[in-house]
Length: 98
Image (cartoon, rainbow, N blue to C red; front, side, top):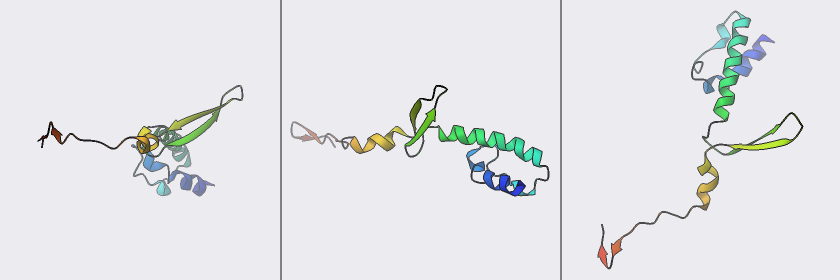
């Protein structure tokens, strides 16, 4: 059970700034690992809700049972493909600007 809990922390640890390089395989006190695990999970949830990276859908259920859909990620990940390409002015009245 203890090795399982330690293995669960490995992919989440890099998402925590404080414990990004921590190695929990050699920590003897499992209570200390569990206390740190709560902080790592909290940091991982916060990292998942930052507006970075690919756009992702998170479906939550509130207290009344309604489904709430939220999207997290960089807005450009969804909307950049609909943008017009950049255009530059090359000349005014026949005179080159550049």
